[in-house]
Length: 305
Image (cartoon, rainbow, N blue to C red):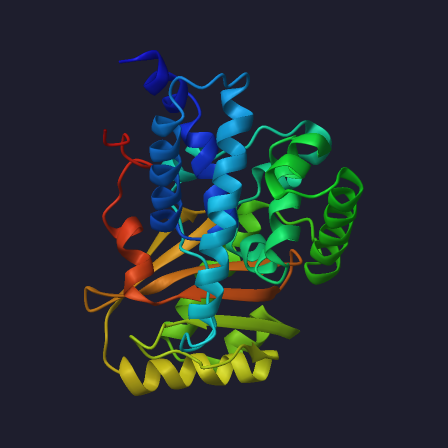
């Protein structure tokens, strides 16, 4: 392996971590990393003092371009758009390197957080990810975004406040999440509206991403009663006599559930909870987004020469 290729490979998972947090799609992140590799090849022979900083800047710019194009496509996406879920091998590989003071964003790859990041502007998202997840200083961020350091400080501050306000944090253990999720799945399969109501916080919200491929709500569902009615109605209409299989798995570092009805994939689900009731449901049903977790692969392949 050449020194030039070795330098890139040393940063590959770092670049994938940036791109996935920016785009919410592993295949798109891999495309960005591959394009970064092509640009790195063209830079061979140049005096690059810091390969990590150089490649990070390139990856951010590529991700910004890809995110703007993706957002244009998502405007016509059928129903709510949720990120592509990942299994533990991918999640561990994409771990960031921020210090303990900012470990929340560094370690959190949950669908809930990535969904909140979708509400930021592309530049806010990039600045926050670089600073809070990857411990980049403002000079590095300014170079990557082609902005001044004071402007980048404002971007990070504004983004951090948006994330805090849009995503209330509750202390809940993985065991609590896992138990509530299993009970929610069982109640949905059993069409037990009363049990669903007991599990959901009154102001809970549910996002169901079918992408126009399978049955799902076309808008977020607000309130426990509406969520319970939707889940019961969905099961009653499409899966009345189905036999459900519920597999507890880890999705993006959080307890999740893979559901099958008569051996056919139903979806992948994670939740947010206050420790007692479910405050948010994230159900990915679009088959395109479930390929990776139904056929696990290692994160990324080596760049092609």
